[in-house]
Image (cartoon, rainbow, N blue to C red):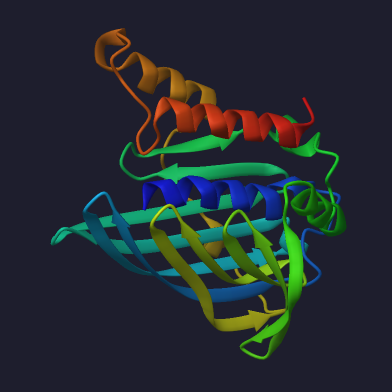
Length: 242
């Protein structure tokens, strides 16, 4: 699922990070709690795997404060691997929790807020520029969604909010779909609290992983090859307008 996760990150950048601005409504709904189920399978070069999991997204202040958490179990050739992910957006700042390293990675708010795509509509314009297109409208749990196709993926958006996603990329199939949706509800601040881990920037994390133990250069970024890291960096640069 690592290749899929890379391209999922790109898709999230397109649909959400391009609108990270404290003065902008990221969504057309004030608050919400959405629960998801995930499933996936991979068959690549004789290696097979299956994934099941659950996710939950909480947001308030029109999406300017958001927490997304996900837990998955992947069975690779009969061996189980568990993965936990937690991401928070807080008025233009982005945080991702690395449970393996027990750190919270922070991303530059300047890079995010400098994007010219600071509205839902302009986010859609960016998807079009990257080859994406709206292919129709469908309902998910009774909510009317725009259906977009991009990078061998389809996403269902209700007023800017992801309710479903399907992907079939390089032998990997993956589906995320909402199972419960509650909009315009009161959510306690404690629900958005992150673990008590130290903060590090992405640049610091990359430098440490590249250097490896003892300060040598034998280390490598987890879950990404150097080529994938370069692709992600170039993608992020293009979003920031630099």
